[in-house]
Length: 369
Image (cartoon, rainbow, N blue to C red; front, side, top):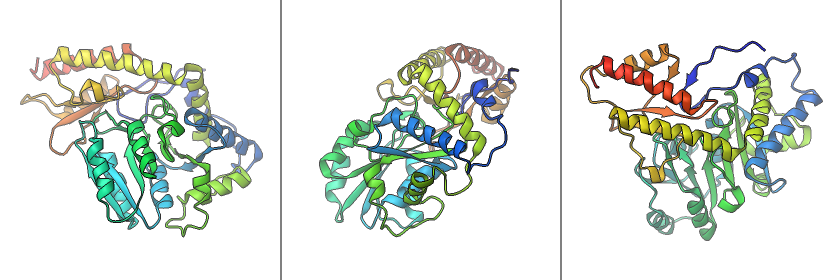
């Protein structure tokens, strides 16, 4: 197998992949309606479920699309005429609010700082103060805006106490940070193929409580392509998606899942954490500051304050580092200048060390150091 030129992606997904995942896409052409491909997708759904829950109590539903497609499928499909509370403490919580508004779904926004832990007491006060019935609550597990890790276990227990279905966007945590949906009282979870799973972009998926998905049968659809019940029902009957799936991407995802099983979820997270420790030690040495305290940090994505230097320009820094083989990402905070470094994917702490050397060279060029 000829090695593929390796780019070190420090953006928060798509992530750097192994050559074996890349080459898994090189397969004979196949009609996705063939039984062979249906069995491949069935294997993928079973394996995804087993990573966070037990089957048949929970099941996975695949969509051709980004992770946002999976989030939109949940919000637009499962919330009825009651109210959903959405925790907005970053760009991706805000995106869920925008989805709810788009579909005209009754929603309450719980705003919280993007770099601080959620105040559970205030969240409960919002639940109790709602004049209507709160049926669902949605939160991002790892808020990719800053790297903040929301305590979904505590939020899930709050939802259990109040009889609320809990929706979790686990886009940037699934496959690295251990999740147990039943223990955490998560009814529906969304993620995608191209972050900590280390697959290729193009597959979004929902893992949901099987009975709760079945209960949507008589719900008037708000959408067509992203209808969660219809997608699940059709796959259950036929082992097929209702619409053309991303065939080669699914072969890559199957290989990526096998590699995750070989490494282990806990071991993958430990590898990521070692890279993060290397990163933050280097940032401190270079005089740069990250904005989420260690206690609440995911160790997966880090939002870093931009250097206070007249010659600094993010695009110039990006281009300099890109030429050196490293891809970095701009920040998403409205009121503070930041850039983001992710340490997910098929990278090691040695890659982070090499990145820090390149970053140091750039900072010396602009006279920051």
